[in-house]
Length: 281
Image 1 (cartoon, rainbow, N blue to C red):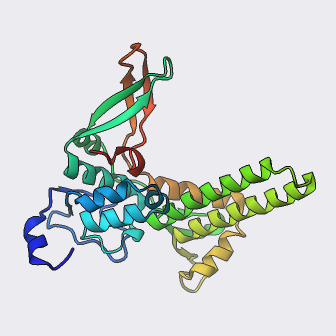
Image 2 (image 1 turned 90 degrees about the horizontal axis):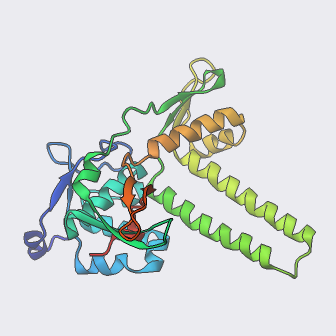
Image 3 (image 1 turned 135 degrees about the vertical axis):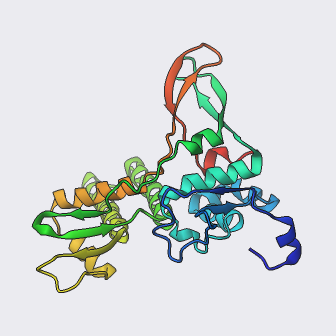
């Protein structure tokens, strides 16, 4: 936060939160209170304008800027483990607009748009930590791999790439100028790019690889690990990926019981709580 004495005197934390990660996986680590909690500040008028900019939301810049402003004790938002992200964003929403989180949900029966309100305290109180997930997995041949969740930077790269790839695939499908053989070739290249990116992101989540007898010391080098990851068996790769996904789980239950205000139909719906749909006062 700025050293300006007026800003320091004016902006005070609105609440303190416990991070699902317990403050692990950050580099550098966030500054927490004596109780191990992170201070959350309300959004400024500038922050609010940024959250309403589609391009900034798309490339992750809005999320990064917002966290720098409202959670200044996190020095590098790019390194936030994604299991903390929803808790931080929801807390910023609560600090800025109050306890109610309003979300529009379409009824699958009559298509009525229901304006629902959920209590942020209740949602956050049900969140769970990921400490129960063992982040060291043992592969075939007794290789031990120490893992961490995806970071905010990883998540942003993946989202951008997924959108780009979807547009590329759609453009290829709609192209009447390409022969079937040319389309097949370009589809193949597109999916190879997706596979390479997936391996890159999983490699980012590996802190070290060790073996009690075959390695003199643990391997930490990213490029070495990435090359190794691309050559292991499918079963071992899937075990690593599955564990990374568990470590990356926000721990917040986003399933809610909904009753349509128009037709009375009841159903369980997953409500997407993220930058794109609840940062509106």
